Amino acid sequence: MDIKEIQNLIKFVAKSGATEVKLEMDDVKITIRTGALNTGQETTYVQQIPIAQAHTPAAPAQAEAPATAEQKEDAAAAEDAKYITIKSPIIGTFYRKPSPDKPSFVEVGQSISKGDVLCVIEAMKLFNDIESEVSGKVVKILVDDSSPVEFDQPLFLVDPS
Image (cartoon, one colour):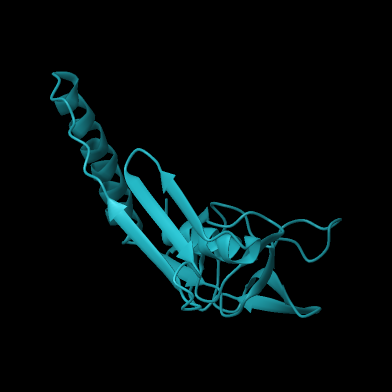
């Protein structure tokens, strides 16, 4: 149970008019009291209860699996480090095409030059052309068409060589 769920639970109990609610789960025990002492304040106690885990022979195999996945992520990050990342300069909706009936601005494997339009980001009903600041070859498109993007979110990987 995360902090947001606990906060929502506190708000729910406060609105319901209940004076005390106790919740016990596997690893969390929560008691919420509202107005019990006529103080007008809420009191919340959150206690983490450690759970003893049985040591089985399968545990080492499970410990190795995340390390392997982590190593794969590190290898992918190291491989991507040699590429230039083109990031979103604004918040909006990412489009790969100028309009639905036209072809995409760029495809994976296509060579681009500085100043080429890579995509369009719609922000507040304005369509902003995103131009390349580097020359190279598009290695990967990191965002799906018509999906929202955040400021500084990676959009493309470009191989400058």
